[in-house]
Image (cartoon, rainbow, N blue to C red; front, side, top):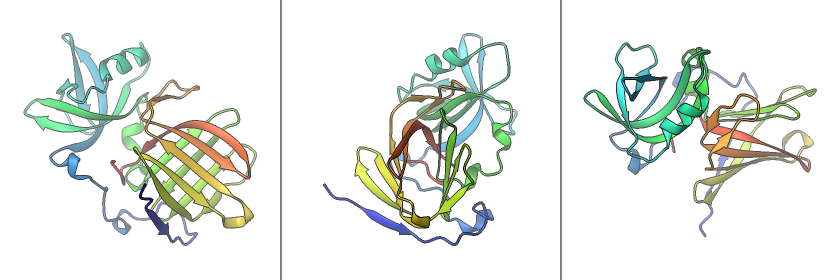
Amino acid sequence: MRVARSLVLVALLPLFAACQLFDGPRQSASHVGQTRMQGQLIAADGKLMFQPCNEQRSLVVNDTGGTSVLQEAASLADDQGKLFADVRGKINGSSLDLAQLYRVERSGTACDDPNFKLLILRAAGHGPEWNVKVSGKGMVIDRAGEPPLAVPYVEEQLGDGRFNLSSEANGKHIELWVAPNRCVDSSTGSIQHMSAELRIDGQVQRGCGYFGGARSD
């Protein structure tokens, strides 16, 4: 198996700097003609509609990628709040041919997330609370009862969409293992397209993850 490694050099400056520091989302050849979009899912006239963030138009969702988006939306639908979706697909007139579902969650503010376009990956879990934000400048780890930890990292591709981010900075051995598995957040019920496992000095915590706007594998 070929293992690809890329060393990410970082300066421990504020992690989320200006957008122009990034070259834009990484896109594989299989994604040509497709667009990564975020917006609201709406059920209307027996169809599932997708309204992109900050737009008035609504697109009929065709689940050409077999993402089970209809079932996922139904499992989260209730009378409270809006249903946010992060997806990739191809627009055909008034339809969206859905190829990839990154996450579905109850949220009326996710469209306004200022950091989304700068993120490569976000992962989080509970019991105790933890979250990791990864950008091209480094990895920031927040854990309950601990100060935020900003570190550089090395990425190792493991095949089948799995990868590992690791760091030996600040005298700690840190690993974030990520795999492309449907994952349900145990606290919010949100559905994300990856499972994640954070290991710090032998302590293991599990959770879910999704690619930010700077990466669309």
